[in-house]
Image (cartoon, rainbow, N blue to C red):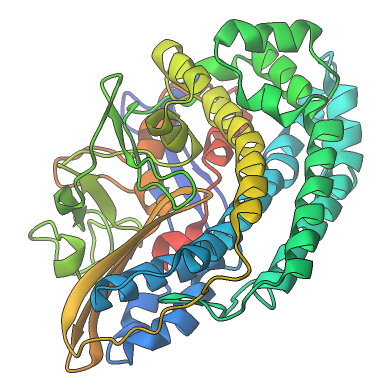
Length: 482
């Protein structure tokens, strides 16, 4: 049934090339999306699994939330346990944790661009565009040459986990207090060689230019020059596509962003009304109004939160809660990190076009270049003669939080222990922020807002513009519902 202001309603999903199950319900009027509701249709319940267990069990269980960002989950759990103990790792231990987290995030950025996002432009719907032949040859799903090369490059980069973590995903090397596996001088040389080889791949195939040049981009005019006269590479191809399809006018949400920061790039904070500010985690609360969760009568700070499913609820339309900061929805991800960290190009794009599809992808690619440079420096800072681990003792009671960054954005764990057992454990993942439902004030989440105005052609059942917007967030639904 449709109302007078709605031409038709669409249910788009399940989405391929998205991690986990996702449906998007669209009201379409006048050839564009009038309203959207985002549904994470599967409940998992990791937070309930953790209740009653030894706090150290979190190190085994939480990485299983996701096969893509399991190291980030491990780091968040370790941070929470370190906070509970009131202790911190030695510099080497912290650096080793952050190197593994950074490698995972770098691999995710590469995968998202080549495997999840760019294949949309190799669709038959775009045949006839001047760039289509190049997009199809490089990025057609399961056949594009660029896809195969990127997968091979990521596989080689992940040898870092073989040296430092024993395996990936779900390494147990990351512990509260540092890492359980020391790196020797020979390992350090091998790690440096792996990163150098990955750097050469990016410079030769993705950018066609030194990473330093990409990381130093500062003005939107430089992007236009790169698009028109820049080196051949997938970055230039994306800029050509973005200009042709108007991706700089697609998918804008609230232009409010948050980042927790990391051990390698410690800047955490918010970006709101065109300016950076401090982030106060005490102002974070989850709203259950439109989630199929009990506890809808009030908003919950994560230390006071609950994850009790209520499948009979008629108002809820998703298993995703609605995190809010000071009562407002915020977007998180590479754009947030680059804005808070002061990257001039991303700040200029945010000031001009806002957080659009183009801004999200450019931020991810600029961050990828900078992150690989930071990774090389971090490996050089490892001191093989120093300690890697501090033995810590957990108290029988207390509470603590562990904040870090997954590739998709801000990841937080909130832990409460009573009698030596986990009394409560709450997780807010990046996609929980980005794909949150409406709250008790009826305010849509960031993706729901970003989809409003997306064009829908006559007869389109899975609008390509909607898919570009959804994938520009690099969503992970299994993390969303943990």
